[in-house]
Length: 226
Image 1 (cartoon, rainbow, N blue to C red):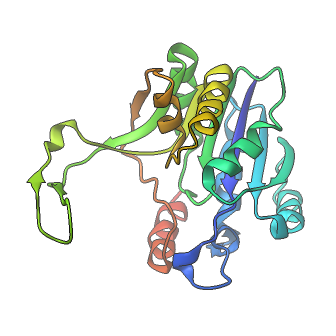
Image 2 (image 1 turned 180 degrees about the vertical axis):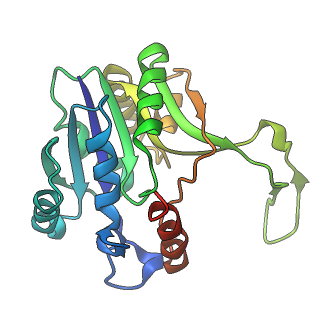
Image 3 (image 1 turned 120 degrees about the vertical axis):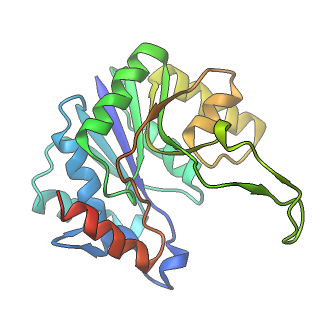
């Protein structure tokens, strides 16, 4: 069984006070609906666990009914940090799950084919993440705004979601996060803590994360184009 955890419990601070970006309209659907529908349409995914803010659980269940998303296992409350939200989602994953796919609900441009490819590689390697080469020149700044050095961009990748893992690997990884009391910015970072290799699945398909109002405009151009 393959279970997806879609995380949309962030505070959306850069969108403005009191704004939950997961429920902002992106064309005819809320941002979160686009992500959930991609997983609904991906034949490699069997169940979906949705993690949202506690005060959005009722609204999320209504959204699920409205858009006919049938794979939902449950909707649960998130935590203070993203990693806490992911761990809350992991607690709800069916014991028969072999692969766990974790996705940020604020990436509405994700395609079912992208999800499927990530799952395929994770089944083979144990850990797979979507990523793309960084083509910009990247500067490392030690302090302030003075450049310390230029990084070798040929070795740099921007990593996104979905990220897919063997269920046993991701559970061990987050147990290590708790044990070491560290913060991780993505799930692959947790897996790296336990020394497991992570395979990058290269993708050139737009996979924008909604952070600002301008991002909404850009993402609308992607999803409405089909």
